[in-house]
Length: 325
Image (cartoon, rainbow, N blue to C red; front, side, top):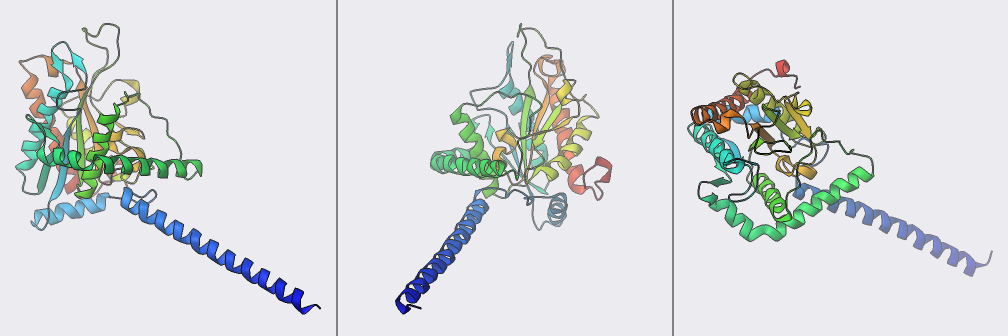
């Protein structure tokens, strides 16, 4: 055999082998870096970001005053913009009334550390500062989560879920602030995020009541990392509210607790680590929000029931009754 040819063949094989090693190493490094990115983005798909067991333990620590359960209350919509309107009733204002009452009740309990995104004066200072200093980072973070979810969908590892109820799309600036709330909640180790809303339904004459009424709770779709724990808490909240208020009679909401994949508030693109719920406390044209003689009583009861539901979830030793493992 020609030694020159033999040596050339050996070099080609060696170079090819080295190239394979380098390509493999590069792929492994890319995978590792992608994993690190995912770790720093939000909840990792297929790994629970929270659980009933974790929350029960957190509550036990809080009872011993070794820790606190951290709750973020989000009155739906912007301080001066958005939400349904019916005659003189503005949803965003009613949302704030309910949220303020929940905030007050939970704040009286030493086991909880409670935050709210806005109050009667506008955005809470901590959140306004966060928006002012982090909007570029929030936008990049949102798109990184979107990229990861699209990649997992295209590979068939997660599937697109049909959402049972249509929701209006938020303006981009509003959407970015909602993602900002999610990012802030993750970074500040919030345990439960509660969005407070009242509902509405499209109809020809918006000055007249619609035909639907009742309460519904939206939670993250089952493939999201916080879905199971969110469903667990939401079931308790629905049970407590159900003692005083009917569940929605809109066909898609009659089950009471509804999974949704696209609502930013509860963690679209898997952007929320803690339990997240969006509670629709009824429809804006219902007497609870329009009759001055009962409005405050109803709002107080809604808040009380919500707080009781959260506490029941966090102090329950068996979850079998409500169908959550």
